Length: 99
Image 1 (cartoon, rainbow, N blue to C red):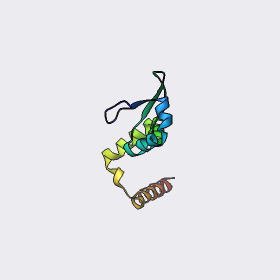
Image 2: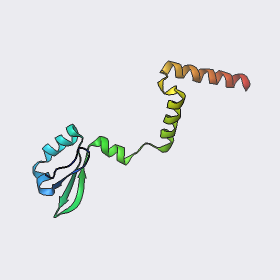
Image 3: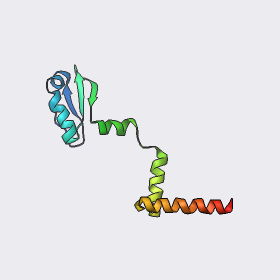
Image 4: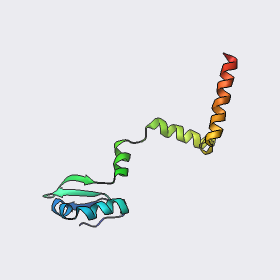
């Protein structure tokens, strides 16, 4: 197997991947590694954790990122469920009184 830095993928041949598949899965999980599997010198597939796959396949929508940033800036990211419920209740009561 080719050596790599901590966050870089490791390149392995298809034969080696097939022979040591269980060990590769263990490294993917324990070391949070990914492997580039190549056949005849050409990259053919990637072996990566489910967590990394989901992060890549379904990245956080930009809107949620913006909402999160605004929440941190206002300090509302530390509110508890009861506090949030109270704010919602107060807003609904205010709306009802105006309506």
